[in-house]
Length: 270
Image 1 (cartoon, rainbow, N blue to C red):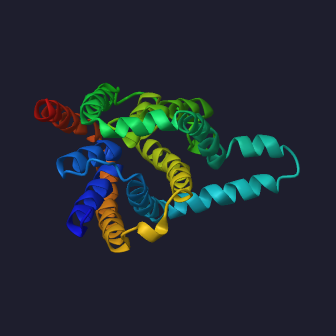
Image 2 (image 1 turned 30 degrees about the horizontal axis):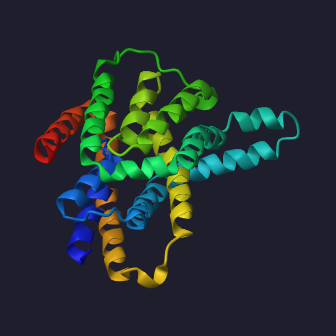
């Protein structure tokens, strides 16, 4: 892989990680059309780390609040367990368990999906249907949240379960989790925040799994660094834009993009 291809893939990752159009799916298609026939999984993970840095910075205040909430709960003399169970960070951790278990047990099968652009195309079309469903969410629907205005346990577990499907390239993680959260009654802001808080352990876990089997002596560090930098910059811009669109209720519009890319891919790859 050369530096130009690395930068292109980095921009694709940075933009599509946060926009509900599947970063993994776009990386598969990007590698396919750039002529990279063997998926470079560690490079993909490095790009995910770049976007992880964006999330950590963008939601730093929410993360700090969630951590202090847990510390305060631990320091509670009475009802410690009850207090911990109402912490948003606890819900993030528990909601991550389903995707972690499925990801570990089905790792080989999932990795095999990353070489099939036609499979990605079908999944992008499915993602589009999830996104368009939020368009019909009643604007006057009562927003149901847990104590303190945060996401409830029922909503957290529901979102965590549906995150499993995002292991497949083409199913957007942010798209499916935000859509499910919105349809379950979460506010737009809570839906986006919880979705990207869920992204943190997922990205960290993927990095740990891949970094343990990498031969660092054979890595093209200049190429990796170029991809990391382009993903970092484009990711920050994309996340700011997405949050603005979610607040405006325009999230569903990405469905048309997913359908277009999915259908065009099916036509091009035959």
